[in-house]
Image (cartoon, rainbow, N blue to C red; front, side, top):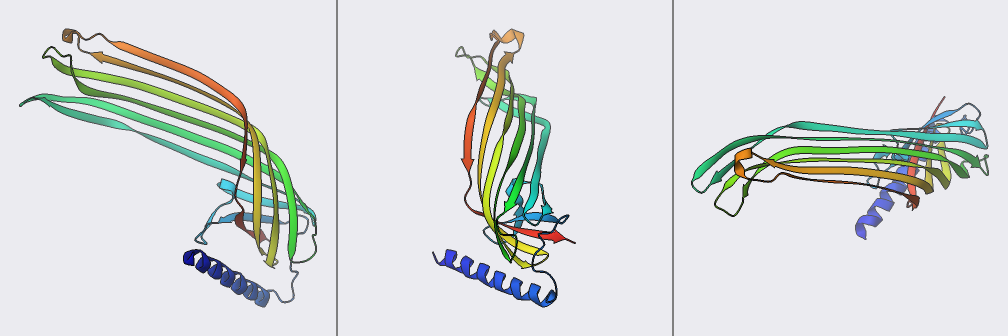
Length: 252
């Protein structure tokens, strides 16, 4: 509880200091940047007051259509590729069973886009209430494969290497809408803080497939086997987020 109170106190000090600093720099300027043609970069504020991505977006921006209308959006790009060889060593009793090579590979990618049309209910003054709604799209891909050996005991005093081959792929699409309500406070004409509550409804398609096989050398009397599986699902999802804080930097 003391940690929570200290964060509130530091946040209040931050806002007060920011307000006085901006006023000192812009005594003769407008207090709001809600003007037609104005761009703003959008950032999120994490619990320890560091800047993060806004709404999970790699890039977030807002364009002012008029003092009471704006469009904001963000795109998220994530990807990962990890693959490489490996080796496995084993022993049977006091004798070495040698070393067998293996390999593994992981690939993933996520692309999401959200845009919202924003209505400002009171465009005049330093504090503005707003609401917004717009489309959201998500695509994700994940693939995992490996070829790893292990020692197998058939129960007849015969131990040998068996290779497990595994492949798994998952693909997901989601299309829907994102609604938001919030308030924006201008410390000065080029900088504002906002608090958002977001609700996202999406229709999702998900498909996955996997196959696993086991193989050994021909002289081991091991019967190779394989198993394949695939499936798909679809349906509606509704996600809401806790109130999030953000920062807008207006470009003039």
